Length: 257
Image (cartoon, rainbow, N blue to C red; front, side):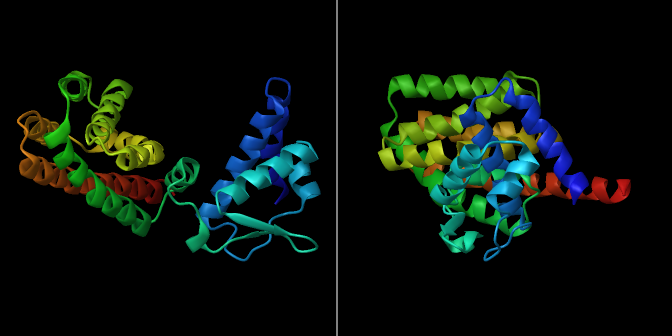
């Protein structure tokens, strides 16, 4: 147990000289949050005490308390006098919180979580694409076209291509002219970035570019029905690519071990 704690403590102490109290508390919250979503701390479990967390991460009591407040605000924990801080049931977690989504995806998420993520996207994004086909302004079409050019022309799997892919999907949500859909885009952006990185760098090929182009053409031609169907095809193909990438990663891990 001691050896598992030492790297975290060293990392925090190294950062003490250059990071403010807020950054330290965020780092503690991130480490504990990852442990919660990965199942190291399960619902009902009590987290280590404040002194134990202070010792592990080399931070002040103030930083620990602020980190716990962050986790509580995201629905992950609840603190009670004389009981301590406990992990809340998963149903209480703020699953669309950008940090909670990112922590899930960074901890080798299970198949069920990936299925749920793409199911959510399949509910939201085809409808958003259809609304964009009806409502997009000329300026928004220019932004969407610029993102499409990046997807098509930037080096495969590069950061520039991944950022173009994110910009494409964010532009569609923006062009839906629905403020609630735009808010969803802001919440899931971190999840999209991680899944896009995984997909583009391992599996996705020319078919993904063509599917993005089909969505773009449908929106530009103001064809909501085709935009809906094209986005649904794109997402289903993307889901398959991500699962292929996960399978490759797991297989490489098993081979290495």
